[in-house]
Image (cartoon, rainbow, N blue to C red; front, side, top):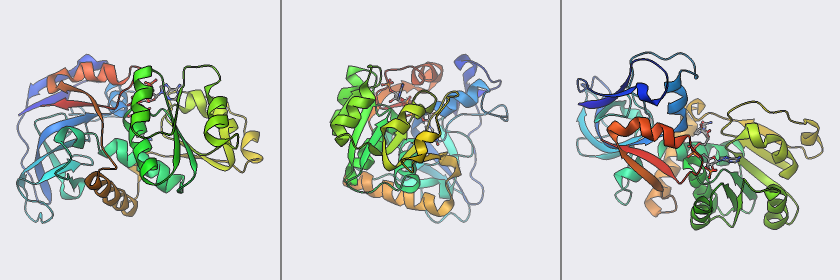
Length: 320
Ligand code: NAP
């Protein structure tokens, strides 16, 4: 089969399009024919060598959607031909086939395309965990999705909307703002404009502040987020690409909470709840992944450049 292989960490060009043996599923394992694989920023950090030790060579990727090709001994939850999305993989998803543990697979409803299925796991599981399990956001609360035009942000807007929250979202381009609005955000703001956060607090919350802020770039925004919170407010740090100085005093008067999270740390029971909620939301249509751009698998280096550019527009995927 064809796969993207990384033999040494470095810039996007270290990803090579190669012929490798198709894996054979062992006991409890499933071989999935990949129809599309999701590209997430974390895969660029790992590839660059700035995200801890990596076992080389490897094939990147945890997110894919496709069909079950072959099952190993003892597999009972899926059978050949089933449509699935992956939540992790043993051999990487930037490939024509990926080997998974049975428990890494979830049903992909018929109304969701394979391309959309490649944008489910990391974006939607992260958004759900941040909003529902870390911030414990409730219907009627004011939620700011700070960075709403990308993979996780769009997922967060759709989840908040389906749960009866009042959501505001930010983006850095007109195209991104339009997308965020189309996905159901009640208010949209350009995070490149001077004074946008104060405006958001006034307009979207009547000056009260946000109950929850889902933060995609904490190294830029965290200190100002504390100003934009309501009493009892919670900020969930999903993304951060550097350091920031904050004034801890700002948390005191508001009884504010700063929460960090990494989707990979999700305990098993919480993960089961997340996937049950995601599959239900996909089936009924309240969750509807937006694919901004699809590249052929061999163009993984270009996809890695684009996913780190500003001007996000939903998900970037690779198609074998
Ligand atoms: P993405 O698709 O590239 O989207 C990035 C988002 O950040 C876009 O909406 C972008 O808006 C926005 N942004 C840019 N500058 C901003 C600013 N100054 N203030 C607020 N937002 C800003 O990436 P993603 O997949 O959604 O992931 C978002 C971040 O979360 C990444 O850093 C990623 O590594 C991280 N992440 C963490 C976890 C976890 O488990 N903790 C899981 C998934 C992702 P414009 O491009 O429109 O300016």
